Amino acid sequence: MSMAAMFAAAKERNEIALIPYVTAGYPTTPASLDFIDQAGRAGADAVEIGLPFSDPVADGPTIQFASHQALEGGFKTRVFLEALTARPRPRPLILMSYLNPLLSLGPNAFSTLAAAGIAAVVIPDLPQEEAALMSDEAARSGIDVVFLVAPTSSDERLRRIGSTSRGFVYVVGVVGTTGARREADPALPRILDRVRGATSLPLVAGFGLSDPSHIQAITEHADGAIVGSRLVDAIRQGEDFAALIRSFKQATRRH
Image (cartoon, rainbow, N blue to C red; front, top):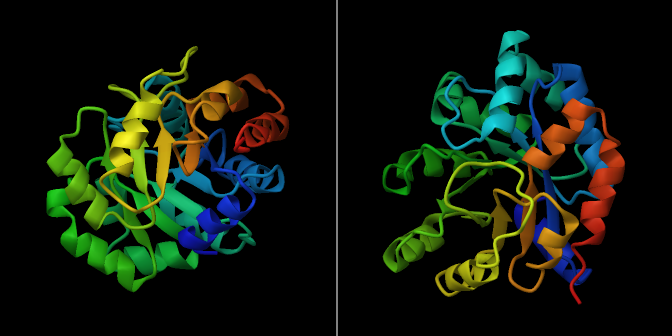
């Protein structure tokens, strides 16, 4: 399923898309693959997979910890992708990766990702101004390159990203890194509305969404929500992962 079809299906159900985040290789490669499967069975509309990297500048302590643990455990990107390729993929998969791990896959990186079912990639350290060649290469493999906007992005930058992002625009809901937060930012609906004025693409909010109430607060303003650090914490603490996904999914209904 394409990203466009996934968003259309959620809209038809009067919901926004729930996109849980799983760190590849954490706590082990087989376990992370199982969590991806669990997320889909529990109602996720898509799953975002984070590739471990030694310098995850956009990530807070929780995802940094998971990434470090995966690398310490001998995580290998190609081994993970081969295992992912062999599994059924009923939900679109979104890859969150810094630039270096993608470059390390070599000249056929995007065809390798496409074979594994990756529908879109988010590359936090790839500036939109320098992304044209990579975005075109990804498109040839049927993969969307998604750009991020922040609360501090200028109107001109919002327009540029809104016109060049594919699949959706990733709206960073806070100034700072990823991480679970007790309270939702009351400014997030206003931020989303401002981005909405710059693009016709679906808007997906991320960074800091860690409670179903946070998602309920944006259902009239966003097309999707990414929940990351809260779920990584749940894996670390041995919580019921599928039940947590279901609780977030119930909050995606528009009123």
